[in-house]
Length: 509
Image (cartoon, rainbow, N blue to C red; front, side, top):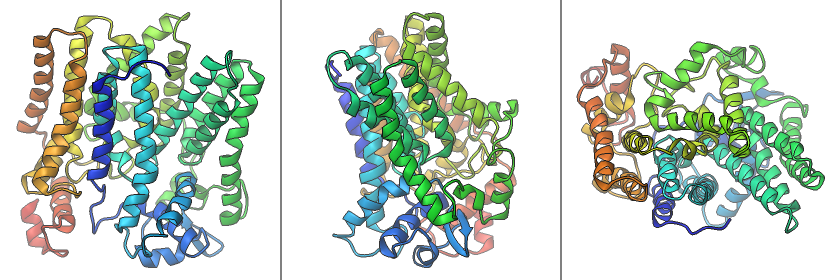
């Protein structure tokens, strides 16, 4: 890809990478079951030569995300990320002893080398593409995408959502690159790499198979036989690994882990419709966008400009076919997820299930920034989004649905009691870095956007003022939410003892 990288764009990628290193993403003694079940698969494969996690449960701890088959226990997750992590973990074991806890250093390094590295690479490619296609606006859009969504938090976690988002975008980016270069050089290797990444995303998050299929359709539609053959050859490796994994663990290549759930409520959910997915429902679609504890447009209002970009791309049918693809793929994915009853994802930061289409949606934003007014409003919305997520990710990030507007009712409450996300820095320095780096990156990017300096400053201040207003006048939180908040603080904050009296928990709530 040609084009000169801006300083703001480079600053954004470096700042993002720095934050993935400085914060561990862990909150011991708490271990996220979604992460732990994958770590136990990797641990069991290398330490015991099996995908069964029975023995690893005794070492790293029990959790609820399990499947059973033939009297043995396995992870209930799509295996793609764990399979990719096995050789990395094996390499790290050359230098580190066997882990005894889920927060061991080897697991932090595993996350950095695998998840964070891929997420940084995707962000770098995304920033470069935007800067080439939308000079003066690309860096700001990339900064909002990286820091104004849960992407940063999940990029420093051993969950598959940000990882899948990165793989999907990198596959799409490679397909565009292959099409652009096909007339001048061989592109079979590029198309094969795109297929490999798209396939690996699908076996890491099963709903992402819809996006992989959409990418495959674009290749077929181009009527380029060699590029098509190379793409499907690339998908063959991850698909073959999935079939082999299923055969080894569940007795058949076509039996998925989700069909062998051990927890009764998860098993009941998976038995509904198509592995838990039913017909799309308007109330679920609305909850994805506007629920007080999860709404994507409440936490990241700059994404409204993605919808505007999609409309512009659809109207200009002779231009930007890639954006029209992004619009169709995003809509397809969203409609499918609107049929999933467990849409909220349990304790979470924002809406993690929508992350796989993040880059596809954000790629359309430049088309909606033609007018000065639109750019001014976008600057304010981006500032608000980045400030919200800087606050939410600076302390305990896993919130249930009964805690509305968590930045005010949860994050600010925890920070007021001195609870900062664990990392390599002291609490004060970590808190300053968690806020200043994202906001500094965005400010540098907005400085390149074609806006009068005074109005740019007004937009930036308005975004911060809006967040401040939500903190000063937070929504009411229920008794159950207050009880949960106090219990989490008492149980998992390192400043507190491991066991607390009920009276103390009630007082904190």
